[in-house]
Length: 111
Image (cartoon, rainbow, N blue to C red; front, side, top):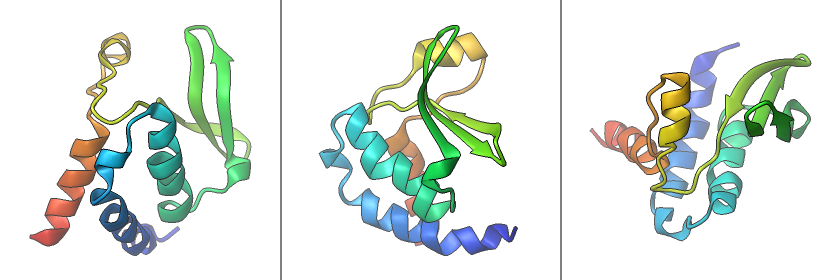
């Protein structure tokens, strides 16, 4: 897999979404307008690779992305501006706002 092949689609997606972040008000908006598009358009996953809202011991997993039938990536969706503090503490990982990630990438490309 050529990772560089994903750079142009990702840049196009960041450019398209970047100017419309104020329109993303709910978790459903974030999923539909950002996360789904990121996974499919920029990273090349297919709908067959996703499992949505799977129940687990701590609740539900928003996205379970599989590679060749094996779980490869778990994504917890949040609306823009909502920082998943509890999730970050439980798993001892840093959590970032979606807006910050997109703006950081867009600023890096502009420089």
